[in-house]
Length: 125
Image (tube, rainbow, N blue to C red; front, side, top):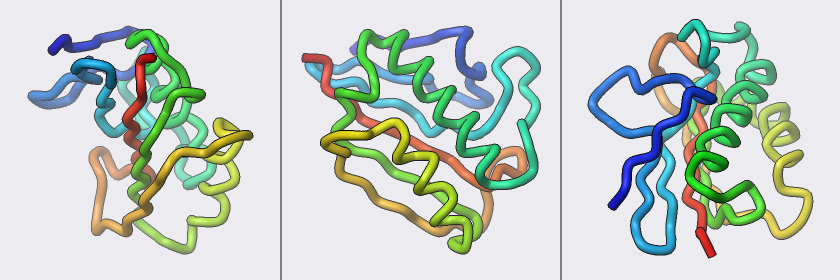
């Protein structure tokens, strides 16, 4: 196993890695809308936060040697399911063809007061 760390995404705020390369897969930790430079939450609405979270995921994927094209499974965590349609549209921009399997889960809260968190698993081949 190999931990992945990039300055292009926020530094972990706890005892975890941004991602772990294990065999032919990259397991990425969930990303919220933290600005990698400041560690502060970007935006107050779900669409703005979803865009930043996806940028953070993209940076981790790149550091791990892959991209959205190789993502096989995602999980989206939402504080409010009424944000689903807007977040879904932004999320879908990263997967114009062959979208991965996905789960969307309503949660009571997320780190730093975020409204959206997105995690992915990608194939490295």
